[in-house]
Amino acid sequence: MSPDDPKDPPRSGRIILPGSESVPPAEGPRIVIPPGVSLDEADDLPEYPRLRPLMLAPVQDKGRELLIVSDPLGVIPGQPVLGIEALGILQLLDGSVSVNDITTALMRESRDIRIGKMVRDFIRQLDDLLMLDSPKFHAAWRELLDAYHPLEVRPAALEGHSYPAERGELEAFLDSNFAQAEQLRAAAGEPVAAANARPRALLAPHLDPRRAGATIARAYLELGPEQEGPLRVVVLGTGHALQGDRFGLTRKHFQTPLGKLECDTAFVDTLAAALGEDPYHAELAHRDEHSIEFQALYLQRRLGPRPVKIVPILCGGFSALLDQGITAREDEQVERFVAALRDAERKHGGATVYVGAIDLSHVGPRFDPREPKLDERTRTEVGEKDHAALAAARQGDAEGWFQAVAGHDDSTHICGFAPTYLLLRVCEPGPGRLLRYQQSDEPDGSMVSTAAMVWP
Image (cartoon, rainbow, N blue to C red; front, side, top):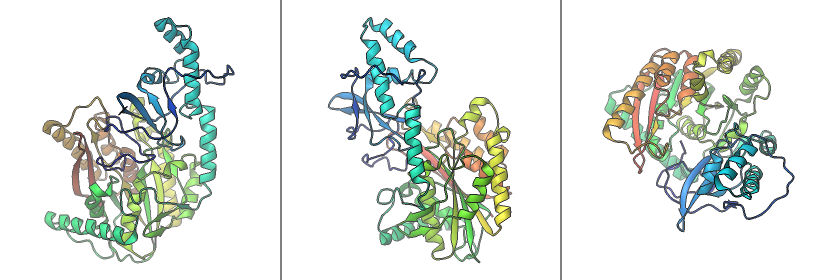
């Protein structure tokens, strides 16, 4: 889920989801099909070109239909703009069809011998723009990763957008969220957490705080503000930009307008050593990811100057497991990660709290243009699926959570599928309490659901 409020105007680098509002194209490279410039015959194109996972947003510009391309990894500079007629070719670039087969098919259809060169030129331009899963892209990605990894601090990515950039304004904003959360607690008849309460685990949303701030704060009300000694918080966040990686580690400290939230680098180093070769392969996904950044804000405000360190871990999706028809427990990478995280906690000791930074269902045309606007029947059905999964989670049942989501093939697009499962597996927390369930509407008839939960 993009952190943006749906009413916001587009900004540079924003991920625009299919079905979003029409906007002027961003500045940057522009391709109009057919290409008007003939390029060199020297051909280093992949024989079977594969388009990388990218966000393609249809827009209108002076009556022209276009596609704005956004890169979740941030490797592509700016947002390239393609003509809508490029869509037919883009849909063929799945790695199973050769360049020759594509050009032959299009030449047969158009009966224009020039189309072959036009198609090759177009695919070459896509490669130059780093849109293909090719050696050119991987070289550019590795260069960015090698420059990013040595940095000690991750700057805030969403300050001044999803939350105030000025410290005083941010403190007032967060205090308002905590005040609303306190009202929710009192209205539900829930007990006040002890001043030194240290739950085993929490679930907290990563939806934009302007929409879900009170629900995020409700989770952190369960963490006592007067901790007895240093605290470690392992945050398992949704890695929206992870592509093929199960996990994304980083040993960076998180900078926010409230100051620097330190990373437990020794703990991360132990975890990285246990995970094997290139454990920071997906670290670049942390650069613009919001799911952990939002948790940092509420942790800092809740605990103030008390000593706390985080272990920031991004988790990829489980869609590949569903496609293979296997469970998470049957996946070797998942099992290695669960064992490594448990071992790291045992080795380093100390007070540790786990946080799952997750959202639940994403339904409606904003997330899938094939889906209609929500009606009350669909909204109720989504709520029933959410609560079935939450019921298993509330019991600390990782396998029950997995089956509740996998049983309907994750039809509601729960982006906290993997982090919640991993939290339950690692913590084995026992029964917990659902603190709040929320359905947040989008103006186009879509909806995102969130929840806060605690395991004492």
